[in-house]
Length: 80
Image 1 (cartoon, one colour):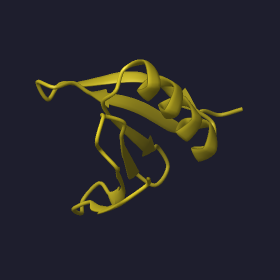
Image 2 (cartoon, helix red, strand yellow):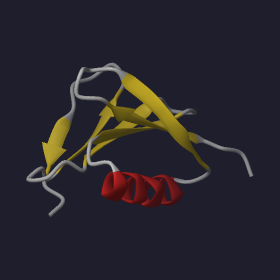
Image 3 (cartoon, helix red, strand yellow):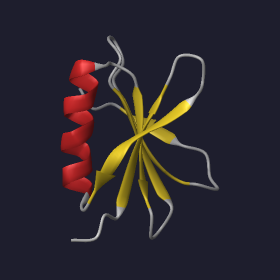
Image 4 (cartoon, one colour):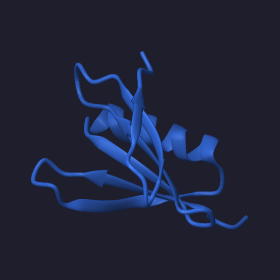
């Protein structure tokens, strides 16, 4: 199956690190949940076909999720 999504982690210094790929958005979200449990940080999922970005903040006390076109600002909504 083609890997359509790239997963990145944003480091505290602003550096962006590639963490893996996923075939579906559901698989990417599951991967971010596992990664975020091990290393709380902001994670970015990028759809390689549409360039849409989903940001998931797994840091303690953070409840942010956003979806944005790579050319637009991100709107945040709570995830719980």
